[in-house]
Length: 394
Image (cartoon, rainbow, N blue to C red; front, side, top):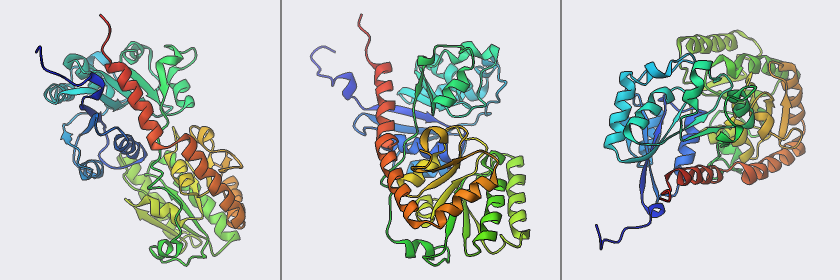
């Protein structure tokens, strides 16, 4: 109405809906939390839409943000866009978008085929983050993936794998959005004695950690094979594995097999502990001398950045995101995937050289602060949203 002063569009508080197919906390969900925490609270109110209550929704609500629930079927890689856009889950998302006065919605691959048509019907722009190599559009899906208001990829390698050769759309249509790390939560600590006491270990015990949910791509079996080699050469070494949250029956069977193999192995029975899910992963990382990423591939590999932010050197497989985030020989070591002997060699080198650990830890912290902070990631995300929502000249 004439005569009423309204704030400029960029100063208005806007509702932003994050949609995720997972209910528990893993690397991707932790990344969303970090982005949301670093958005300007005077301009954005982050909401979460998930299928059911769980660790993710609990962490979101603990920050005082709204959570919505709706059921849908997660997408397979062979989805048909026209069909999925008409499913009940998509209609439920549409109702939430219409009723919530949302400026934009942000999703991931498994919910996008429902969320994008819901957003189009509700008049809400949709962005999404591509985070894995296996998400390569089939020929009948390519026009669908040209429709989102913005597409992000965690790394250049993920972007190039998604687009294929030749690319099915221009490379500059996919923005790189490296997941950021909370450098206050993950930071160097000097209370090693207290941290080790949590796990019944002395401060001088050589300690190696793996943090990963149970999926066979995470290489828990490679980690255990590496641990056997390290323990045979350095019997006082100990090993911790944090994480749980299997998604499928196959993941649960894989978890049970890893537990069983560790219990039956005479070298690992007293040296390796599976901790299950830990909300305090920063303490697990800070307690370790070395953090290992034994995955067959990683879209990004958040734990490597969390370890480096905590001034802990990493030994990581080099396929995928780690090749773009870990500086080999400076912030840690990169080795080929599926090679426990190469992992063991580098872990032993670090365990035997405290000065090298300190040097790499300090370099890793500086590297993350310079290139991979959560604040920088959130600013990049905000700039994209502002570009999408800015009024267009007549």
